[in-house]
Image (cartoon, rainbow, N blue to C red; front, side):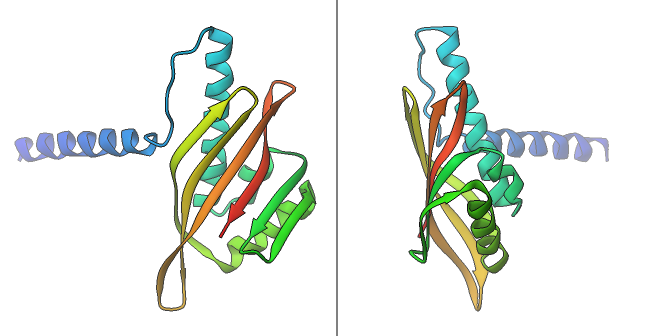
Length: 154
């Protein structure tokens, strides 16, 4: 009985480690010239993770906390344009209420100087099954913070 418990714990740790690693395979770690630059891009990665958590849990506040002044949205081609933070929050909330998330994940990323973006997939259930939308999110760096510049869900 004790061996089964130990084996279970080992399997659980292995699965967690593999899934934790695979969750970050979208982010390309680079060698940075300074500690300041490394911290800047760690903040960028954390910002993208907050946004992914917001989409994964249908919690718009995790996303909107990274809105600056104006955000460009393209949601299914219907809601397309520049919106202030309140309008963008409402549009994304409305979108997530209708397209109930099953999962959200990033597939790739790019970051340089004061700009970064990720590509990903938004999986949802509607009607007779699971479907997906392509997602792209870009951030801009200003005043020592990363802010959402664009969100595209198509």
